[in-house]
Image (tube, rainbow, N blue to C red; front, top):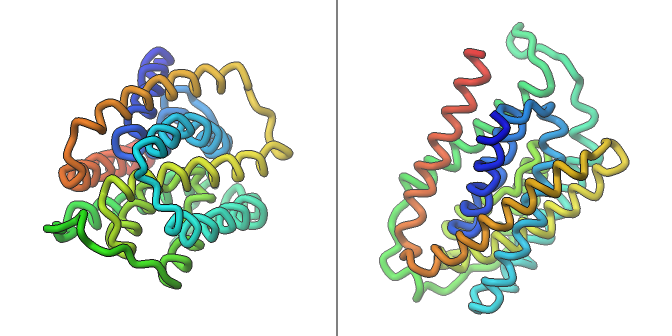
Length: 261
């Protein structure tokens, strides 16, 4: 099944380049189910893969002048702090085995189920969210709410090793009133910085298979270049609901794997 995993690595990049998210949603399941990597280690690898491969997308969006630097600062800085807190002080203190409602569960199962729950909630917000009729013309909103949500998003996605675009994009679109394509571009920048910060903090705790990691990063980067090209030809307003259905399907898949295998 490894060859399927390598193909999926390209899809990880295409997802990031096209919709500014979904890379981590694909990365963790691919590493766990196709390459049989422990879920905890998979979260570390995911941070590196998504962080490095996203750089190509950031450069492309910067050239298109789609980055909103103010929202990156207001939302992104607290998000990075949240990732540091969760990776440094929370994740490694979760016991390897514990019980929920008298049902035994491992740390790996908990991470995957927590991950899938977040994905499901995010999917509903994207699918059921109201359509913005004049998306480009709306004035962005910056404030304390975005900062608080950014901190919470960083802490939550730090635990599951996700870039967090599936939470960042809805937050920037719904709370920040950013146009979809600007939200995608800003999300990519935030994902890049906080993923690399989270990965660097994990290096002292894990033994990294660098050769394997470099191959996946190279394939994902190839994918993101492809996704960047496709993004220029697709209307931003149509991406939101399609992305929501994508996240919804992936969350159901993870639930299925955890409960029935």
